[in-house]
Length: 185
Length: 185
DNA sequence: CAGAGCATGTAAGAGGTTACATGATTAC
DNA sequence: GTAATCATGTAACCTCTTACATGCTCTG
Image (cartoon, rainbow over all chains, first blue to last red; front, side, top):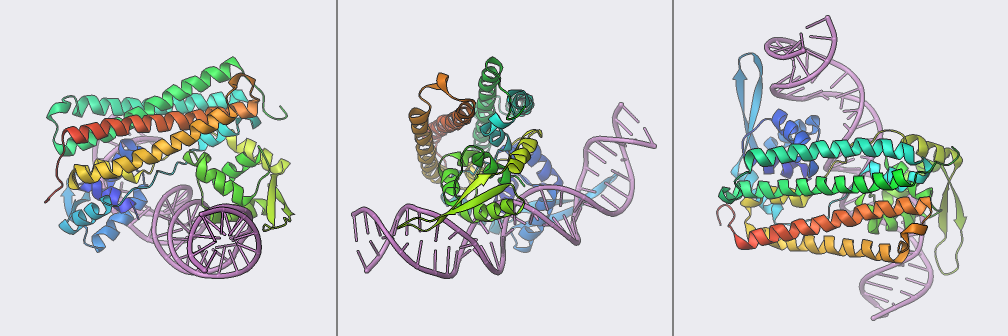
């Protein structure tokens, strides 16, 4: 019941296609909301059924035709109404931390391998966020309200990835300093 | 396909009941994995079916009988095998950040109300983690491998909540310094 | 005597993943 | 010619949430 509002939130900023929505979600907004393209296409169809979005088909030469979606005033009202409800704490699901939690069963070398991979993924994500910051938000003082809010959300992404990296480093040093074996190895 | 491993991870440390697992997950381990009690009971039954856990019914006077689950060697082997697979980045779902992202539609006063509520929730969670740290992990140097890994996971929870709070403060100040109205208000 | 805590579940439905499907163009 | 990008979807399956159900004890 909330994917629809995440899509409406993006559509409240600009008209776009299902394809571009799934790209956005995969690259930049994925740390606070995510969905597969199949889900997005289905949800867009449902949203149109309710009259919260509307699409126009745009023919292209040398590319497949695309459906550009726009939010309706009913959709904007629904988004506004939802945004006024109090939010619950986010529910985490991080398989890597589960592995760390039970890390004594596999041993430090297995953990370190996965840890370094995670570190790289978080570093890449952070790098991407930093580049978006430098490219679009270099002059913070002159931002519109809309862009200011987007910038604050991006800042959250950057601090999130920064502390992830700091923690990875802390754990890496700890595991290197005092390695151990898994059960029965 | 991963809730089962989160349960096995906890069961690799100590025998426990479905009820206690759902309490644990709600309070302390919820930031890296979560599930409702209904899901946990069902998954425990499925795990027993596969021979990865086993339960003994413990009768109690003045309390309902309980099923104490223990991991089997097959379960431990399965957990080990799963832990060796590389992990993907966690997929976030944070409704509050979606609201922030599209914050310009509702206005800063609505956002500030929710923000302060979120800040309180994150502060409470952080406080709880800090108390667990002080109570069980005061002497870090003398921890067993098992407890050391649990401690590192807890550290992740603490740093996570700490930066959440720092971000909340940053945003609160920004919204207070430059308030704005929602569309059509 | 109402509500919270202990302790377990079932069932319906919503949400999400994985596999499959199509078909053109562009880059290596 | 192999893979990636653009652009859209269907179908089967699994996971997760929400509502309902039971019954006893302890606390205010």
